[in-house]
Image 1 (cartoon, rainbow, N blue to C red):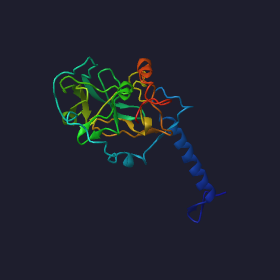
Image 2: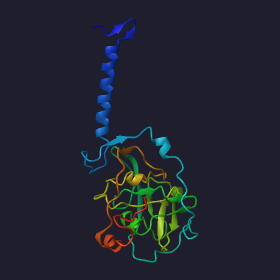
Image 3: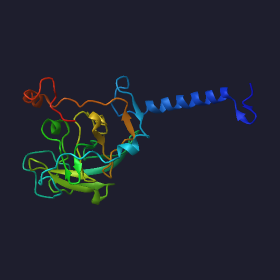
Image 4: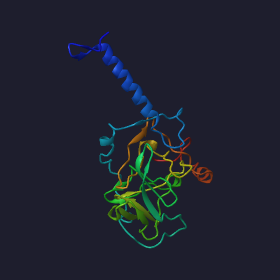
Length: 233
């Protein structure tokens, strides 16, 4: 059978072309997975069509306290790990991310607020998503505009770094530097870009659940709700 008929691609040829395109897309989807993901459990896809919607302004959280405002105060009031460096990095499949001095990928939380900048991740949430604490709000920067980096005061008096006015965190579900298993957890946590935006280049097809908090904290929080982790995601 000829490929063309009257200057047009015949239906059979169009079907073959479409099948080839779909096969290529399927191969591309298989490559869009965070390091350490089990492809049999969580297939992920490139979410180009979701990018515009994902960057929409999130629903404002309840009014933050006056303490959680832009600030560069003194050292934290308790012993916490300090984030001393922020680096813009390009990771395979994910693209632009921000990592700390140890290479851990950083995230932002949709239930936080950017105006005013404030964190709404406390208690068990902060055990699973450790804040990027700071002493002076002046981490070493590599590939990140200094104007994008700020500081908020958390409810406990500690200082946390922000990027683009969004508080940033690590995820204990990431088992080694460079992993981004926290992407889209609960539909509210996303890898942060050097500009403070959500990186939605690669998203799971299903909404991942957060990992459990460390054992000692899980036991201490059993009195909240039966059968509930105590998270608010």
